[in-house]
Amino acid sequence: MTTSFVPEDDLLLMRLALQQARIAAAADEVPIGAVLALDDSYVVAGRNQREATVDPTAHAEIVALRIAATHAGTWNLSGATMAVTVEPCTMCAGALVAARVSRLIFGCWEPKTGAAGSLWDVLRDPRLPHRVEVRGDVLADEAAALMRDFFARRR
Image (cartoon, rainbow, N blue to C red; front, side, top):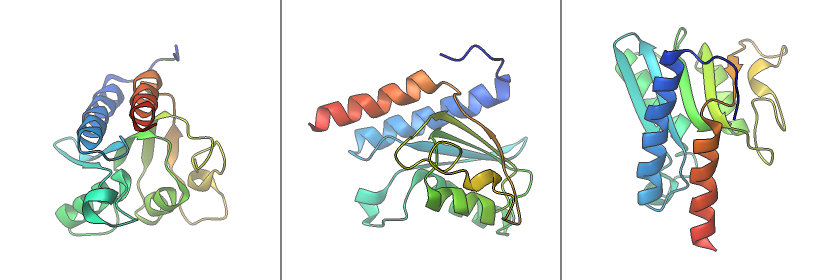
């Protein structure tokens, strides 16, 4: 468990993302949840829905980005903060860059597919036109436990 200070707003967003991950698990989806705060008063939520929608792009982050962009009336989500329970993959990291999301906080690291610093670091690549501020290990133990329990039940 990390001992560094985490702002209360980041903890609140991560707790909301964990709720979405639990909903995904109950629907037999990989338990990843995401929330995106557009401003002080509007938060959108997403969770993995690949099985339900038969859509390989229906990752929690993509679902939340689609809802947020529709609500905002623009693809440019500058100033937004996303919280996701697991380090984003390359597709999701690329979408965060393309949407100009300002900050990402995430729970547990994903060493096999993570693109926020473990396997790749798409979000802070200086060759891209936008960089995202990244903070990992926020409620990481809870996020990792959801993943571990989900896959243990599937074996």
